Length: 443
Image (cartoon, rainbow, N blue to C red; front, top):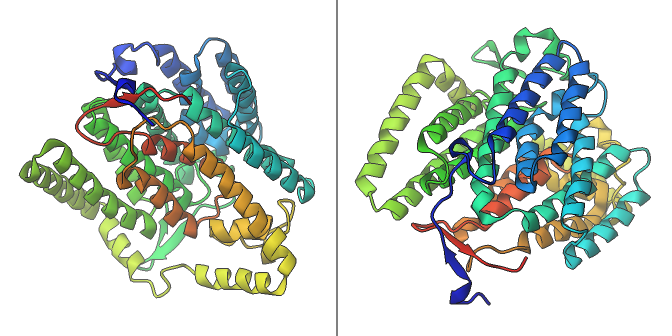
């Protein structure tokens, strides 16, 4: 139990722009040098090796917080972080190196309950792995990195993590804007997501992702996290406004119905939170009204509003997902072995089509037994390293968002899942109120 003496009140520390101790200007330079190198790698893939070498060398002169910030900045670039178009992303190997570094920094100490689930899952995955070594490494290394995150990252550095994932998302999206007009960049993607809206072929923005829905879930989680820490004055308000506007703009360009619904919920959530934390009800409503009016005006001028209305008027709002889910469920009913043990991560998707549902995807590859082990492993991560005295319902809001959006996306093999779960843990351990509090908890 946390005692009163364990509570430490603190003044919000300076951000990277104020030359804080934890996150220094050198990190910012490395991140933007990496961004520039990955941009040039589209012309010449040799630059991706230079970026990889820079990121590996960074383990010798960046501290643990900075290395995590670097990873959060880079993961939205995964699709172009390659030596050639058809190769495995170098980011997968970078996470493996960083995992070993973090283990060394933590003296190979790891949560026992997590380790037990991790061991069972590793053995379970090997049985049905086949030649799918990449996903095997990815699933396990990201789980270890997420587990160590709860031990190695202190509460005062949460805002830096949020800042860098937002910077990475926005800067990668700026490069993604050139995808449709830049054949060399478009070559990294199997297809450009277009859809006929009002009889006009419309490009659905995906950032540097294959699918707009994967990009939209990252955007909405970044947006909520950013605004929370901006209200707590741990991220400069001017910078937060610029990043928030960019995130909303890029999110709207995805024409993702799930994004729009999540955005409306997020707006109400942030409005209520601001009113509770500041007590300024009328001012909060007025500020939101002005922001909405300006946003709707410019969105209408850009033709976004009519496209959004068309998307919601579609006869099948699930885009045939329900039919795909039905096919997988019928397959489970016909195969008890698949239902309970799964077909293994070395198997191909049923009928060559992904289920567009993380829960169905887990059962298909891992079965009910493997899915329970996998979920149990991440539950151990979320339960580790509590930094606040009592978690409120609001602390679980990002987890609920991720759970809901995962019902329309297959995220089992996505790099994003581990990083999003780290942001969920971060949110679960942030005191959302008027005062900033750190609890000296033995992690």
